[in-house]
Amino acid sequence: MKHEERLAMLRKYFKASGKLYTVERERILEVIDTMDNQFTIVDLYKKCKKKGFVNAASTLYRCISVFVNAGVITRIKLCKGSKGNNVYEKNVASNDYLLCVGCNSMKHIELSSSALHAMQKKICKENGFEMLTYVNQIRGYCADCQKKIKG
Image 1 (spheres, rainbow, N blue to C red):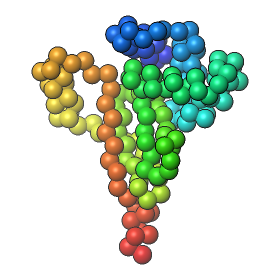
Image 2: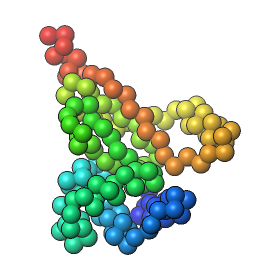
Image 3: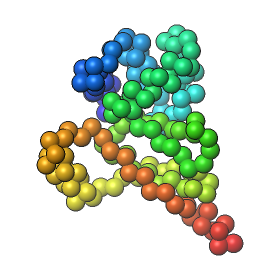
Image 4: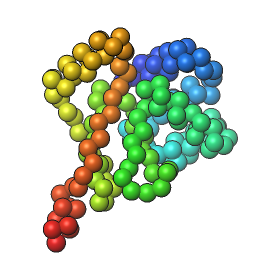
């Protein structure tokens, strides 16, 4: 997804939700679009701070939920760790992940099932709903952790 598409999604969200649109949020989105696909809020803060777009980390913590709710990015809660153990990813066509509860590894996969996509479209159409994005997380054990378990 291009920056212009993400920006349009963000503006649409602000209009629909009645939230205040700010240039500061647009600048944070610009930084997100320069990041690797997966990033932490600490990574984002460092880049935004370096560019002079934010002064306090609290600004990002408030904005990050707005970006998630707008469908611009996806929050992936890793299996282990504290509340702040999130990874963020710029939204792509699909957000499908394998998350290992043993070693906390994460793998982005593509579930390219036409039946799954058709079902999503049908459900949305039946409910008068416009889908922005979806997230599918499969939690379990990776091959390395399975070997450790079997000993």
